[in-house]
Length: 505
Image (tube, rainbow, N blue to C red; front, top):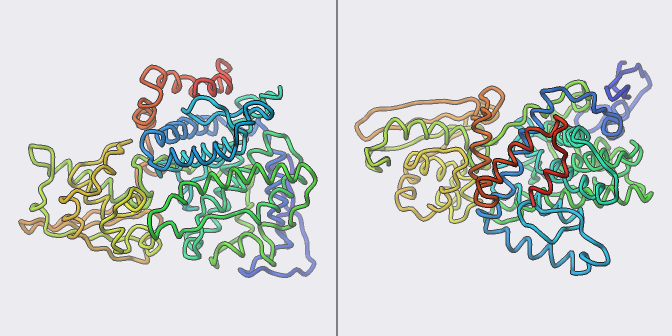
């Protein structure tokens, strides 16, 4: 039997192993595929020489996007002030004297925070608008944990004289993304039915890998940190019941706890072995009911194939599952608007949307808080609101104005004309709509991939347009342009990461 059980020069290698082993709940051979060990070894042994030009460009793209969506929460998220107040109180006043804070929260200025609190706040703000990049096969946001962990760890190391290059940061971010995405791919949609949010449950492992890589820790320490993370991974989907702010905090909790797990492991605290693949209560067994989990696929071609490069930027600040419907509705709006720029309610008789059963759970179930949301989070997870708003007002990259219209009687009335059904053959973010116009015309449209996916890419000008729309209210036009230029030059030797961080304060 040929099984994956080692890494050579950061790449997965195989060897023959024929002795009898027990299988896990999904029929995988957990002893034959020591996933926790392999992921830890990958994080410890990957080289900056593994960074291709494609990876570097992708790192710059997601970094710029992360900066935009994070500072955007200062302007647009009502949860930001109380979250900052709470974490600042937890940090306490002595941080600025006896134990100096060393890490920034983007766009806030002084004081600086301890690394775990800065990571928490940057990740929470980065996810608050539901505008951060996504990885479709894992149904999660990997960047918000990887990048937040990288920035805080980099700055804390710099404060004690340990310098890391832009390539070091890019590699650490890539490793964090890769591990989170691969875990998310195995968790799948099924994890949501068990009530877990993949962004945070998988994100803590990616954040640990990012921090450990920048700290240049050995694989044994990383594996122990993973073992501790098995008891810290969390993220309840119950936030859907009332549009609570739990979701915004999920990646923040993951980054905070990642710093804790790494610190404990570095101090010699022993974490559980086989934390990811274990049969007694391993991560995959506990967090997903999926029968399609494959440990071989999880670590297959690790270090050779970077799955995270399929991550996509979001043009609209809403659940990714709604984006196909928003984009199609935007095109309908553009072709049918009246001279005053709006679509009249009496032009439409009814609207029918079709989506996958998995997407229906999050955005299509006709509960009162989805059909007529009264808060931003419920609206972000409502296909009814998103379609009604877009048909009336159109779709624009980086536009946060839809959430000022939650009480709009026109949107409310149009939402009443929408019905939703499921189609088990539909996959991923596929979307289908049928509109019956008041004059009897019927229009049926379908879209497999929303804007931003590799099959329907987000162009560079759109990346910049989105960033500027979010950054300008915080940094102003001139400084926002300087940030875009500095990010673009990060790997050229003309700029360093600390110069960028100083600019982001």
